Length: 341
Image 1 (tube, helix red, strand yellow):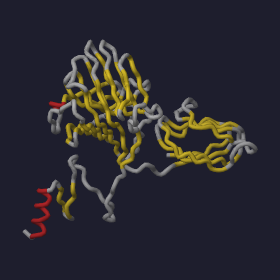
Image 2 (cartoon, rainbow, N blue to C red):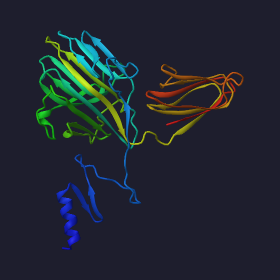
Image 3 (cartoon, rainbow, N blue to C red):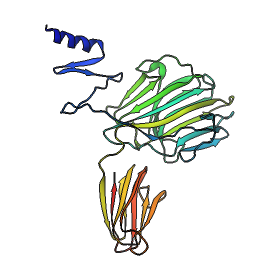
Image 4 (cartoon, helix red, strand yellow):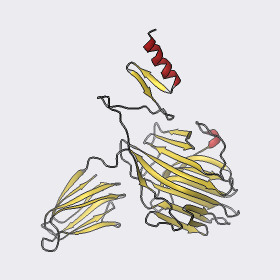
């Protein structure tokens, strides 16, 4: 065997690489390959935070976080977020991000949290943290999350309210019992076919979905965390230093456009995206922009397209929308172009 071939195979066997006819391809702990273009240019993905914000000081920033309390409490102190359970059955506290992390095909998203508990698990108390969506938040119907129920730690996916739960002792990765009262890092990396649960940079479990999707309603999730008392217990806490969702890929994609003439209600997109600009080509009366799949709140903006009082030309927005994009134009002579992705 030639020395170069022997060296190539030895490196492939010794350094977590895959050997092929052209050389050595490094792979990471997830067994993800390093990719290159046909022109031998390495592909590198940006990491863009798309949901979540730092817990700064002692005031919860309601521009980024929404809390719901039922005798339990959500407080912020010392730049940490603290969820505290109540002491009786049905007492609860929850928090979720105002923004949803939009999914872009061809990329993946990663949830990350640093947190600790005030105890090692308490009977009759269930705590969850991860990504989720529900039409009436904070109740979720779809998502992926960690759960501490009593002293049992598990990984979970939910599709249309149906939960699939796997105790950490039965996971297919590596698990070492955690000191829950110390700070730990929890991550959930999700694609359309797999969900990876990672604790302190070690893969705990990989959930595979070969024949059915793991989420039924959306892949655009909120960050969420909650604590629920299902019996009677002492008040217990979970304390977060941070929670966010990042996209592992470009912030923007190639935009598209929609030409709208006359008075009309036009649904430009179902689901999240970015509104780049509104171009007023010809005067009308008003153009109302909704972050929704119908003419319903929330409203992004209202553009005066009257030729006397309004604006003819391009109006830049470059703002995200999360539910959908609907445009309502009034005035028979209205003529606009919507540029979005």
